[in-house]
Length: 141
Image 1 (cartoon, rainbow, N blue to C red):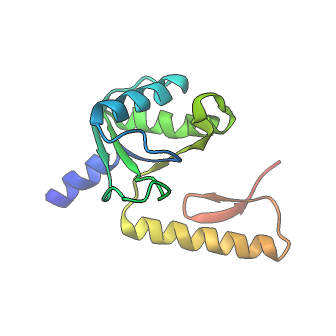
Image 2: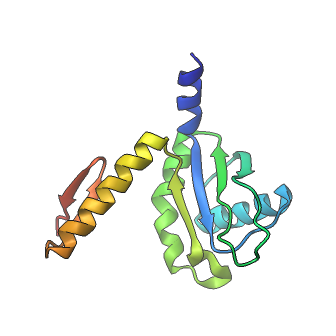
């Protein structure tokens, strides 16, 4: 029963990686995330916000990721769909923020293997490859 609850909760989670620490206080992180999601024009209700890992002493260290839980799966799906638009938003450094789904360790390993296989195939000369679900397919033009 507990695993089912955890699985259901993960469906509403997103994993954020930003190039700079948004702040150590939850209020600052929440304000930043509200701004990012607002710029993507996504209706949202953040239910939980947590910085993962320990804060590094070195100011040049890689920033800690932020786990954001949204109220519903629909909000998460819409946010992930529009997350690619952050690449074009240079104002405020939004193009340095990456949003990805919160995956289980097994799912991360599968994704990592797919990316490695796709890079290998691309280095061998194949073009137009994308990952869809758990398969590598050719993009339809």
